[in-house]
Figure (cartoon, rainbow, N blue to C red):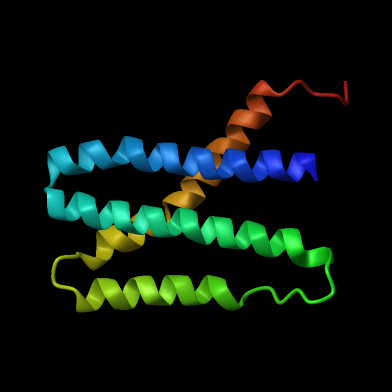
Length: 119
């Protein structure tokens, strides 16, 4: 379980750092409205990742129901983004997908920097 907790924390930290690094250039290139929309989507993406990790952690228990909360978080985000005039839908959606970039970067980072034990 220690490896799982390390993986979970690494994925959440890498996703959060990437979202923070992308927020500044978006604000500089576009506007605060677009950057705020992106940041909201990225924050919900990290929340989604935490919910997913919690569900994976509960897989061994008897009363685990995986998959109900994740889709609801995404649907709620898109509904809020489409109904609230202060948000742009595309930056919210792309911000939400930032957690996938965080996973990809974390996997590359650990693959390159971790010593191989199979040699």
